[in-house]
Length: 298
Ligand code: ADE
Image (cartoon, rainbow, N blue to C red; front, side):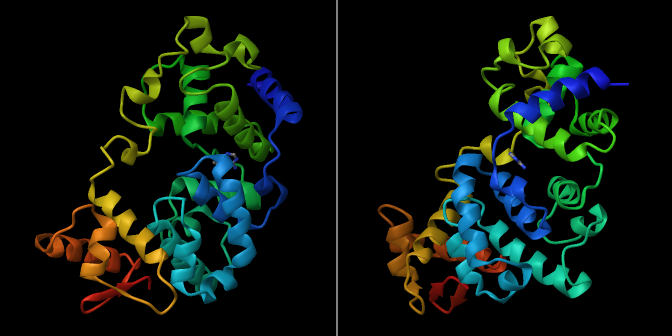
């Protein structure tokens, strides 16, 4: 049905695929780690972090047994610290409930921090499930190629992605769409002249490739945190707190007054309650330990 499209992309992928470490494993745990990291951070920055994480926590069991503070420390530079805590909780639950990571998407999705994207990625890349894996890049490529860049919803794009999945080739197909989106069908400057899908692309035919209306028109397809001003937000200061606590030696703790100036320039006593509020949020998320006026990683 879509043979021409399948052949064009899969042939290109066979010749041009990127050599990425998580493509050399089918270990569901390693794939969970890589896909979680890749949701928020680019491939180049993820590669060394992926190796470091797996060297320190090589298995679900190793992650489960580690102090949360060590996991949070290793997450430095990846953003979204809560994901580090969720990963450890997911590992614990998976071991308790199934003795390892489950293969069914619904089971994966029931674990902390694992949404449809990550569940589909683990199911497809580790267990060979024939399912679409729609990250931002994939959505953009499909919206351009199939819809000419017309505005649509994530749900419709997912249905479309399922309908063009080549039977038995979901792994390569999904990875190929990601590579095409990252290297050729980029957001700002698509390289249509060297694109293997050029002759099949609706957006190219319509001259619409530079207008990313499919995703921006409905405000979907981009992480929400990118849209809000970041510096000065609560999330920004939460990140600064975790970063300051990462610098502490094991066993040391900060007080509110020693921590405040590290988090905010010109910190004054009047801001102590504000700081405490942030710390209480972080403690509720499992990212810090609060002991009276003193705090550290958990
Ligand atoms: N982005 C998200 N998942 C990816 C993967 N498996 N390979 C490359 N980039 C990705």
